[in-house]
Image (cartoon, rainbow, N blue to C red; front, side, top):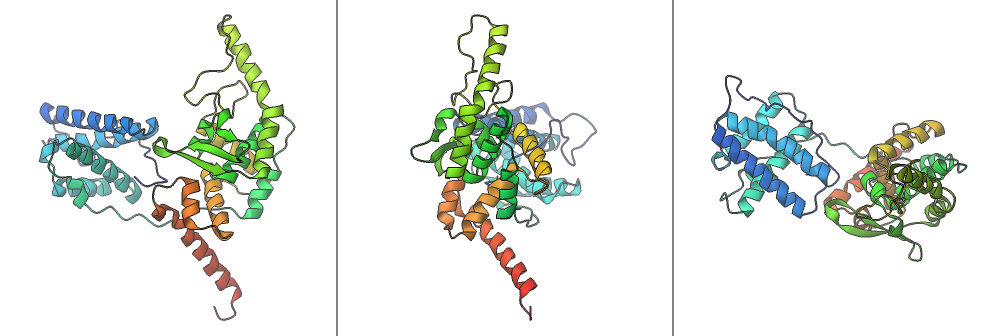
Length: 343
């Protein structure tokens, strides 16, 4: 699975090309079920996000259904069968990106079986990934980001929260999941940085500028308390003997709270950003990931080296970060085409 990708597949999807004349053999089904469960246990031990584990499970149940319908158990699958499955996905109308994602899940499944000594080799390693159309990440201009953030008022607790949240998202290049997972104690005021738990439960420390820190301080001083009080009132109404007004969480008290005092979800963050882009009249359709791409692009434009940007973004591989050099190259070519008299 790519560094910036996540699986997103619905439950109950029928396997492409699966026969419909009768039920598959029970024995292969049981073996596939155990294999998928084994990979899920491995992902859990590695700290994979619950959403990632569900998505792998969904994609692999589809593959298992296809294989069992053909009478194949895990040990019966070779490269030819995996290629047939990928071809069936394409014939069924799956986009290259979807087929590539499902193939990545199949590779992970057989890698797990091989690590546990249940098969001798991973047949999916020999299957080429479907070519996906090359799309550069969207990044806002620095003026657009400035117009968006400065248009956010600071006159109510929720406005203070939103401004602090999106100032921080842009200042530190955070994913939406990382943003909502932050705890109050993750902000290092003296070090002017924030502690972030990224993909695979890997922790990194990212510098935060003065503007974002000031917005965070305003929110904590004048905004967050109303959400804490609301949570306390709700908790007391439900349980009069309850002393702690805030719900427990592995990361401690959430930094960003809803009006009622609950930890925000990623959908809350996306919805609020849509509201503010419409309000500002700029960056229509921008997502938290667009702010993350803008963070990286503006750092590169300002002279930051790729290795530093990789560390701040939390990319496992420098090759993932190198996409931003293509963004800059495309920008320069566009400027050349517009400006040079003999372009």
